[in-house]
Image (cartoon, rainbow, N blue to C red; front, side, top):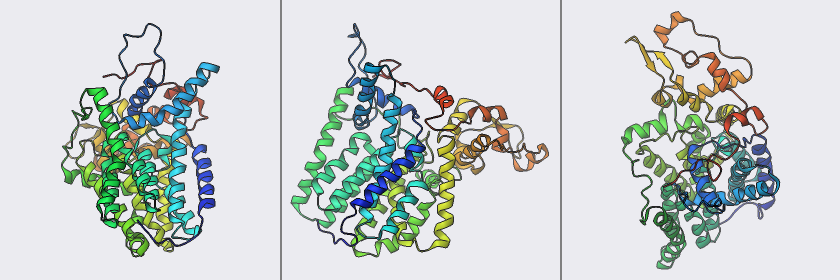
Length: 469
């Protein structure tokens, strides 16, 4: 596969600077604690792969997870190091080392993005693009959480870069590993295979792709057989693609509480810059690949019963598609009147999650029942996740804005009761002030008060409750 290359001859120095810069930035906002319930299952399975069973524990159930084995395999090195440190010194650093993996992953993707763009654009444009992608999209908050989607994006993009620059077999071998992390990664791997085969229409190219994908498929089937005595995964038997697609597409793209444009405003720049990006002959096929992946993910997850991917900051399922579609913004960086306000809005949105914790408002909403006055009909309605998804007044962004205001000791003023029948109950007034106050805490690794509140130890495994099948 041959692509013409233009621009700097060696972007490696630029890449080192990008990695170190974002590693420092993300490390400074690192949370250092577990965040997702899904992660507990993945960690438990990872531990079961290397932790020796307790004496007399031969009758214990084997710990598995319904999620892809790939995430658990990636978690083994940091968890194993933490286990050894704990055995030798008594120091517990499991959560810290495990979550540090996502900080490194965040910096690594932006480094790969810089490497790719440096072949076609000047260093200044590359820096601006990675700064926008790294600080004004949901990529920043997800360096603080332990979801699989950021890992999937980095691995697929690494595979894409290798394929783009003359290593198609190794690139696809790496990208296909994401199928072992999440089965829905087919929405990324499939377009990547088509992108390659359209430029290399031969039987040899097809065989090369098949051989590169085969090891990951074997790994997936082997993991399924070990867990369920079947080659086909039954872990999601009760969860289906049952959502009306119109509702899902509207929710993902336009809803007042979960739209991907609200949570990653630079996506708008990527969409507007796509045509100019695709106009360059060297990048035309890449532009279509990024668009195809984003569209495939939107259509796929619009049908999923939980299309918003909660608990998450925005729609976590769409992280790969959103970040890839942000890349074409590099072509319109000269349109400052548009770029500056959009990027500023993106940074503000991410800071709300980075400072107070991306899931804090969701946890607050799940933990208790809150009510608001029903408009027109009278009575009271419960504030629930449909409000969060579709009502901009009850969105995560508003919820985190209130939490940050409490952290800054400038909480909102209570609503005038006489206004409620006309405008409805504000989110701030639907939840007692003392509840807001107790939920607000700085989400950084050095915040010992939060560490005690969030569970600084293992969420599952030999020393705690573990999921099993």
